[in-house]
Amino acid sequence: MIVQFVSFETTVAPNEFRALWNEHNNQVNGQDQVILQQEVDGKNLHRYISQHRFQEDDIKFAFKKRRRSSQTPELDIRIKEAGGYSTLQLECENETEANYCKVFVFLSTFPELKLYQELSYQYLNIYQAYYESSTYTYILEFFLENTQVPQLIEQLKIHNRITEIGVYKECKQTKKTSSSKSPTIKKLIM
Image (cartoon, rainbow, N blue to C red):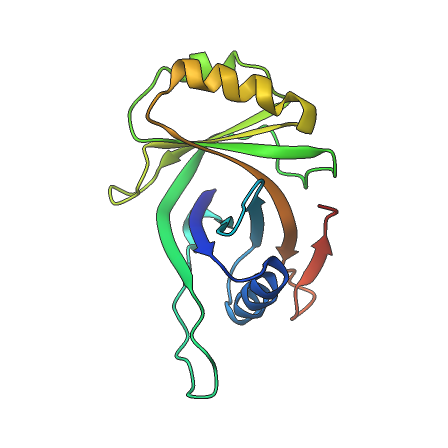
């Protein structure tokens, strides 16, 4: 499986952004599964990460800016494609429960992954850069209860002083099925 990571930064209100994102996502064809997460503790600047999952032989990733009409105001949304990643370790593919969140760690070096696998968490997904042009070498996705986040962050700070770390909650999950032309949207409690 290949996972394409895209990050968004915006001052647009969360409900408005999710509506725009969902509208765009409904227009993109060929994606098996798309997950959108919002960073916890985003004050005025809201950060999101979307994960677009594909089978290796069916990569059809497309994420282009739509042309805006003169009647549509321009929105301040910064988009950054982190690239495609192969799944090195997959312990969880399910939606997170309301009292769980994800901690993403973006690594630009070749670390000793065993150090990360020994930390406190419930599940850990590890993604390795699939393309040379990918922004990071590895992306780690820790699944854990909200109450365990401070402990994991402290453990991560010991191992990484330069790495990007973010705590995220799933906004919604969109799955396309072969029996239906329109996606099913599941909203999670935030």
